[in-house]
Length: 443
Image 1 (cartoon, rainbow, N blue to C red):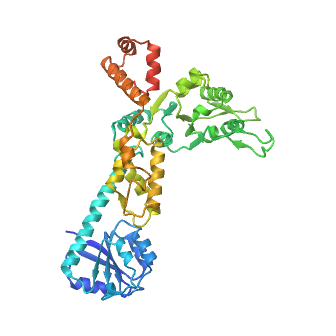
Image 2 (cartoon, rainbow, N blue to C red):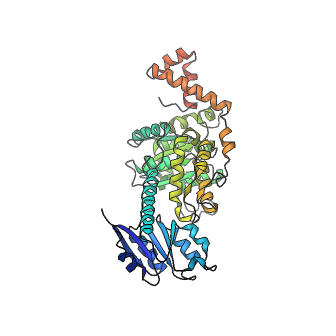
């Protein structure tokens, strides 16, 4: 059996010799005498357990020790000098942050058990915390049926260079999907330029997209390369494409057809090689019918369609997602917070998540900083277990769910033959196509 490493923080430097004299099997002790040395050692060693020696009331600053033991995923054990527990001046509250504590003189059998228990806990928790990073693909976390379907679609999308339209509710992760397409495609080494069409004034969006020459208008003191040109060789990601003004849609359609742009104030035609990925949270097919979006542009963008499922349709992924968010933000959590309570997990799974993954990230980050408990509770997340448990789907959600199930079943029965499916359902092919688009059904 290989040695298990223990970091010993001892100002005086006498504990290690005592520990070695105890002949504790399979333990390798690394001694340091300052907090700075401990921090450096933690960055370079594989210690799973740490011992901190308190030989007097003022051995270490309470805040400094708390900051140290919150930095790394190791379990700490306090070693208290003789009589220290009987001294009221000793900050006993600090012991709440430790896995265990021992008073001098050391009881060999009890320390052996304490070290083994702490080591086992670290190994178990580390193994569990690594799961979120491998429970998905393309940089995303999730193994629910809806996410597995998305991964299968991405396998096909990344191998070609056609435009992609990504649909999904706000906060569901559409930009993350766009990044995945870029990184795993042949354009992965090229630029990724993102632009939110709904966050730019309509009077500026044309020049932001196409760029302008010096002197093209008041304030144009130098040439500006537009986002289309800046993305050449890579990907242009247009978020909230449904907010693109109608008068600009014609110009953008011309670019998609010709792959050529003209900067504002110039007559030079610039050829641009770029893949366009657009995203929207609105139903563009309906926007076309309402005259708010050009039909020809819609068909140009919607060559490949991906739908990012809302969080409420992939509840199996929520515990993994929460763990991944926790791990990514571990550096800014409160020192005593170690994870989620079972109550918090249940509340997260039951919550409808109208803000999707963005809301989950917000609630978890806030709880990690503000919680006063070792395990984050439902209240820390701003969730109520009782309220969450009684949350019910709306009538519209139920109807859409039933329609999707009926259509998908019929399509499978007729091997995706739309005419036969429409005939069986008693509706026209046009109506069926509209329902397939609205329900984001993949043929």
